[in-house]
Image: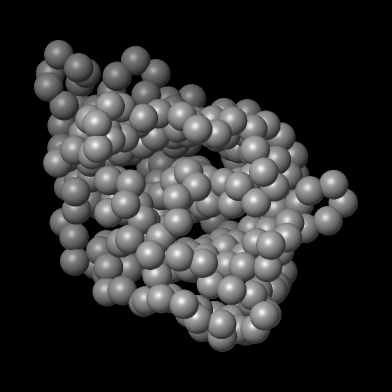
Length: 292
């Protein structure tokens, strides 16, 4: 695999599990400043905040054969202002396969995810994810890409959003638990079922630690699935943090109707929750070309 394809797939696969397809977007050579987070991307009205505000999240009970209904469970979540982490990513899809890619992560809760992909002693790519857009900069080939969630969701036939991406890293419920939520007890899990726009979400809460241990999101029209399994929980600032996340994305190809599976593992070697802004430096030089 060429260096260019490697850099592209590493960053974007982590951002959205989407492989190395390029989007058709208008060209722009303007620089992007992280100070104001003004990103040269179409800002759409389908941001996660609007979706959660207008959507009806409902907890439903499963068939009695699947388990017994339980009262509401207080799920343990991680509270933080900012997060910094060092991680390694393994990725495998129909066309790509690589291991132990180094990624540095910085995050402002519910707002920004900043990524730096490093090679042998130097940075090869940088990504900036906000609630309505994603920008990726290839520092080797001096070009950059801009995405919106609506474009990616349409391209890959699965409803992607910021909340799911944040949950991949942190392990909190991606969608808020409502006061009247009810859970189904099944084996060692309490299962919280939610409906968010086109997604049916099953949250598996561990009975022993009341942490989100597994998440399965199914897109109703297509039956495409996104599954997260969390493990290797460790104490970070008095919170249980999952140091390993295993992701499976199963999407039916619109072209040949075959199921394409993408798998990814994120393994953190260091995680810290901090109160001071670690900085999110991101500026695209005017000489970089915007790719389509």
